[in-house]
Length: 299
Image (cartoon, rainbow, N blue to C red; front, side, top):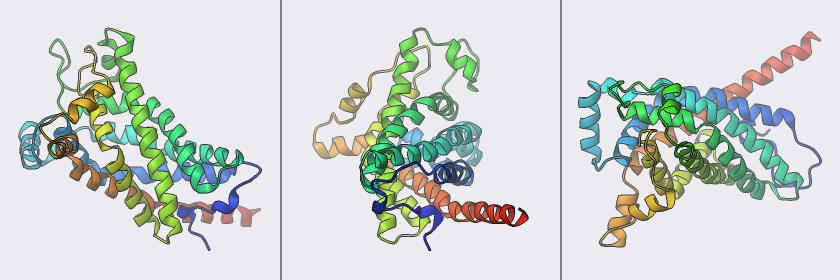
């Protein structure tokens, strides 16, 4: 038998005639439910990563500063509610739309592996663009960015929109998040398919694929975070400008290190988060299959 989390469709599905709606819904359910325990487990590393990305803090300095500013270890859970909102907005649709787009690419003639990379790039941009406001709010709160005119640091969505002075200010952030998510999703779902074909378990294939995606797109994510740490009433710099700035330095090695500041906590964060989703998928699908069989028996 094939693990539900690993999917029932391989390269043999090339030339399929229709989209498997149930498979798409199952993937969406895995993303929406599995991300809750994953986010709770990984959130301290997310806060640490953002601090390192948006400042010049080393790992040790970032830990000290977060604890000092936020009042101890509880500071590492600042913005958790917004993080769960963002992940649920992103992850459920991320898995659902990725599967729909992947199967759509298969209908167009691609094999499963090719379809995973191509379809997930399209779906990733879409879901990242839509969820960018929730992510922006999470970054503002977790990094204690002050609201203009002395309004504290607990940003609401209305305050984010109210304080923008030009419509393009928010568009920069939405587009940046979309591009980053497109790259991440394409790498994650494509590599996860490759790893599962090599026989890895759901938890291992999800976690390793997430780590691969982080390594490939980290400097782009760092540029997006630097856009988002800017208050909404200020225009952020473009992604291309920020990436060029990241790689400026006396040598390539120094530039590379600078462009990947905070990558260690992010790899840990995403590996924990997505491994948890992969492990949860086994139990989620077992519950779905149990309820389906029970419903069939009742009929």
